[in-house]
Image (tube, rainbow, N blue to C red; front, side):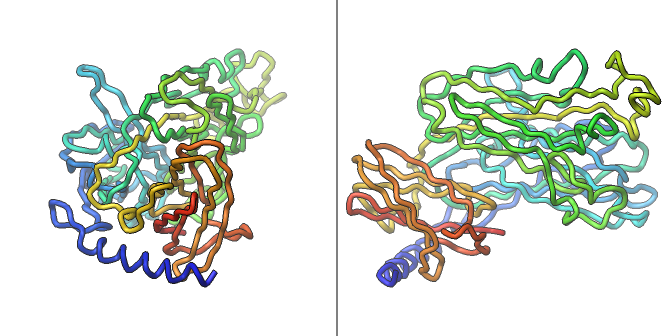
Length: 456
């Protein structure tokens, strides 16, 4: 291991001056963040969408990452926060081709239960990585800000949205989003109308220049007092199919009691299907690059665990007081089960126009190593490497001090681009702390290394 430490010290010596000196047109250095405000203490209530146009930065190739900081606060007296947990989302309305407008959801949050206790002095802020949509967040941009608040009057939320553009260069750039299944309310377990009726398989043409393809699902379950207390309080598996690959997870958040937007009143600490009161909704992402072929159509499907709601006015065998406390929905303790579902394909392609790139410090002919994305990251990140000829490739991951924490050996039967995802754990499966780490690929007698940052 000691033989690798001088190499890492040399790498740092080469990288740090370049990072310190590199600057963009506005004078910002690599790693600096330009914050741009869009909505500024916008008063939102009564489930009305606020659509506005904002001037955002140009030249997205100068930025390696885009962050979104979403803040909600309480109106001052005689106003107050809406005391109920409500679904909210931020969408880009994009015109392409001319005259055709498409909504792309880029963030989803759930407002907290009463956080003020009548004092109207509380706020909550969440930061999300929206780099996947940076090509939509440039120039004159139309945003749609919505919170499903039915409170009216002086109660509601003051919403502020800031976008942070992080200076840097990457060899991959996002350039296209395709909405797959997109529905603000999809009934679940309804008698005679299974959810599969709304989740028909799709075929999507994969762009010929796609180098990385991500399938994203932003899904939250709502409704309670039904069979198994679905869909809000029942964990159910969801799966996506891409080509011949299937990816499955359980839609559930088991950490609501650790919510940072607290203390709250009500049942905020109870775990829920994909969301927690007073928190951002975490998308479910899958790298489907290996499951599709650029330039060819690909098959996609979305499936949900079978479920039938027996406590419903739609079910012919439901008898209030016999098979169910009350077959009728009352919009308080017994509400219709369903999902708010947004699924997307996000395409990235190579862009080698960046003027500053870490790889310049460690040139290599037989192997090319791409910058990881996202960076900084939590909980996982992905990077690619290109081989000019078939053979063995060894991936090394190091701590900032030069300790090797993970080694992966791979055999490749042909030249090409390959991907590796790291979940922030060492070779023993232990979750590593926040900090700077280095990853290196060794192939054909050549090595190339880059650095990344883990944020826990």
